[in-house]
Each structure stands twice: as structure tokens, then as C-alpha cells.
Image 1 (tube, rainbow, N blue to C red):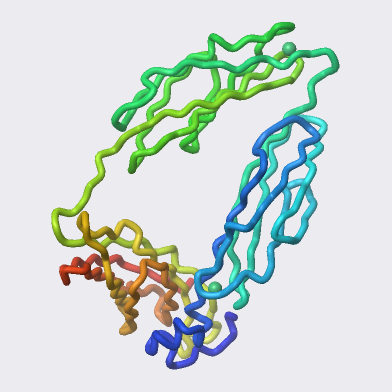
Image 2 (cartoon, rainbow, N blue to C red):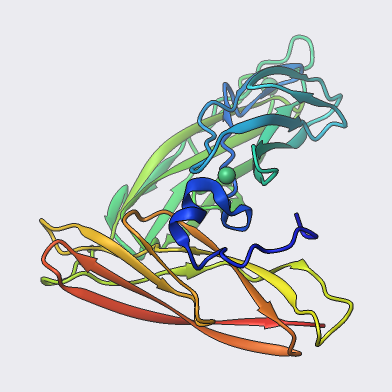
Length: 318
Ligand SMILES: [Ca+2]
Ligand SMILES: [Ca+2]
């Protein structure tokens, strides 16, 4: 794909591009892993399902799995057995490929605990937390004192706060600070002195006042870091190519209204008009050591009201 010449029409005649006539505007597929279980004792059988993966402008032609234990598989649905001798967390990677050769990936952690020693009873995990809900930022104190082990002692209290952070200890405090109202699954895992463990999960609800525009729409977007998809060895005669994915994330219409048109100006003379909030990929050409393009998004709602926002895109030829 990197070596393919860019059709001159690409990006100019967007309708052609959207109809599939322009490979450079191909949207990569989105990979999605559903796992039947996320943690358990060794050996652990996990059924993986990639059915929720999709390609917005084509179809997925390959599903490739890497289980993090040196083994791989292909297919929409695959079973895998993790059989470590000691507790291990595996990172499972799903790679999907669309009919234009673009790749999407997702990763999922699978935690496999050591099988319990014969005759040992696994400990019970139980915790209290206060408050259980409230406005963010929310300071929550967790207490695992109600956990127990009938034939031994608990040696480790491991916490996963459900927001990507973890901690350990009998008692622990955590502050939740989401950007939108969220139910966080807080999980306590206790390990006994024979290595057996059990987990329990409870929900912490944190509320954030939603910011909605008064009457017109609000334009917002995000841009990926430029990916150099063609590195020119003959600068400045031949430019390098940089690919950027734009997503109208955060663009919202006023209550009771809808955004009908998304007008993208990429800052290099090219533009695109979409009637959906789909992400769009644009390829920049640059021969300069660094070049900043001013990209903008204008959204227009069903009342004809509009809003615009700009973001600087800087590409670098090293
Ligand atoms: Ca595609
Ligand atoms: Ca025990």
C-alpha cells in the first residue's frame, strides 16, 4: 500500500473515494474480542469470539489470534486453554484484516491463577466501600476486612478499581475522576498462603454533569498521531506521506436536534463532506522537515446552525 501511487482524484472526488474507488481513504477495520471468562484457575478454557468486529467500508477477511503464550490461531470463534504452572496474566491479541489489507487490533488480558494445592480451601473475597456512589471526583475508601480463609491466612489483597488503576492492601482509598458518568467495576482478589484466590466485584457509580449546548451544535474532533506510510528517500522532490485518522468525537447537537453534516477541511486544500459521524482517514504530503496543517471540522445541525473547531496537525520528516 505504501508504494501504490496516489490517484490524483483521491480525496478531491470524495464520493468516488467513499464508494471504494480510493484505497488511501479505506477505513481500517475495528477488532473486538469477547471472552467467555477473564480469569480463573489453571488450566483455564476460554472461548474467544470476534463477531463484534466490523469494517465500516468493507468486510473483514481474516481473524488472527495470538494468545500471549506463544501460540496462535485463526478464525471468527476459537477456544484456547491456558495451562501455566504458576499464576500468569496473558495478553491476547486479535488482529483483523479488511478486504483492502488494513489491520485493526484489540488486546484483552486473561488472568490465570495457579491451581489450588490439594486439600486447600480457597479464601473468600469480600469488601465494603464508602461512598458507593456520588458526583465525581469521588473519593472512595475500600475495606477488605470481611475477607477470610478457613484453613490459612490471606497474604495478598489485590484491587482493580475498574478505571485502569490497581492497588493492594487490606484498606485502600481511591479517587474516581471520569469525564462522563460511569459505573466502575471494582474488583478485590484475595490470595491465601497456598496460592489459591477468589475475586469479587462491586459497582461504584460516579456521576458527571453532562455539558450540552444551549441550542446549536458543538464541534469537537480528535486526530491520531500522523503515521508515516511512505518515507521518501528523495526529499524534497518526492514528498513523504502521512496518514491521520480524524474522529468527530465530542461533536454534539443540542437536545432534540441532530448533526446532519460534517465538513472536514484538512488544511492542505482538500476537504470532505460526510453525513455521518464516521471517522475519516486523510493522507498528507510533505517535503519539508516539519509542516503544520490547520485542520478544521464544521458541523451543521438540522436547524442549519453550525459550529467549527480547528486542530493543528504537524508532520515531521526526520
Ligand atoms: Ca475498510
Ligand atoms: Ca486456604
